[in-house]
Length: 483
Ligand code: GBH
Image (cartoon, rainbow, N blue to C red; front, side):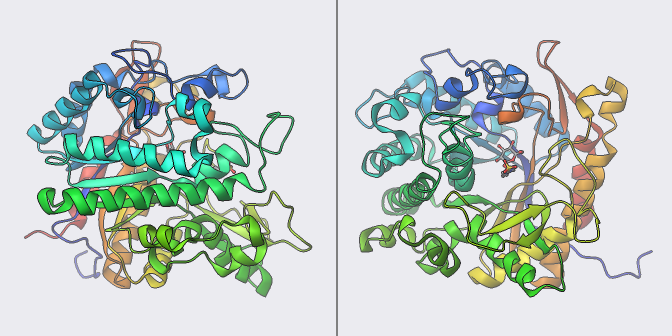
């Protein structure tokens, strides 16, 4: 011991936990809040496992003090949470009334966090669009209306909280909004070409339109922040993108090797290339042709260079097998297959409760390096990372609280991140674990748990920290350099 060179993290490294409004708040019909597209979508039978909705969720709207106490127990330095647009502007639009009670709720929460020594990191949009905007003009599909309404919402919250919040995230995972919402139809508003799921939607065009519109809305919010608030408030703003690592299904096959980059381009560079390089990736232009929107000079001026930091959500890795033949018009992956086992039947990682998630920590280090190379070593904030556990929901309480699988996940992943910082020169500066507590896991309902805190949905949303809640602080304590 002691003689092995150890990777580390810088002394000012910030770590904490992440959540999202619709997944934890509940109080869906209180204090003037009106429905979001997730309230509507989750009520449709068959859309959410077990028929769950966010109506009560973790009841965090009423339990901000308990949540802050949890953060303190864990030793967290920061907390990433999202705002419910439907609480702040219940109908959503730029000419609709602002709900002062909604603003006040977050005002008090932010003050309480800061008083507890916890830095707020605020996401403006984590998938819960005010439902009225979907009804009124087709929500995210309507560029002119959506961008104007989002920009207005952004200005309202910058104005209200800008003196206290120094880290802003415009959108969480636009890939998910676009693909899950408009191609697979698995998330709100559930549009898809699959007529067994929805009578409306065109999965071959809408995801690309929606993705483009989100980028423009992001750029518009960033411009407002930089022009009107940054000098006064001194904060920073960026977008959070999801993306997992890719390994070739058959490393001997050049087509599979090449498909790995293409996979990441379709998942991440779709959004990151316009922001950092001012264009869509060639691989996407080649496959999608005129279905991929083109940039007007005005839009590009908003989007190109619009990140003060790169927000990175990362969970796992996949094996990638190149497609043969022509891709289907509804293909969003880049003419390739995502697999959990390679050519020899070797699994990328252990099975979890989430069918898409198998841990592979080295992939985190590799993706941090891949992104840094492609985007010029930007400052990276990891805004989500975490895991579910196979069968966790069915375990007796005492076993459930000993979440050693999750503990190992965090040890391995945070260690891989420290290696990327120390050995690869990656400029990673913050890390938010997903999630502070078990919560509404979207289409997976409440059966899949991601929390370091157990929520007892039967016992009045009682919170009980799991082992991982205590261990994360120790992991960072060991890795962060002492001044
Ligand atoms: C995050 O997304 C979300 O930001 C967060 O709200 C959520 O609770 C957390 O993950 C845990 O899931 O099998 O084709 O449907 C993570 C990124 C990308 C993971 C899409 C699931 C499913 C692909 N997600 N993926 S598919």
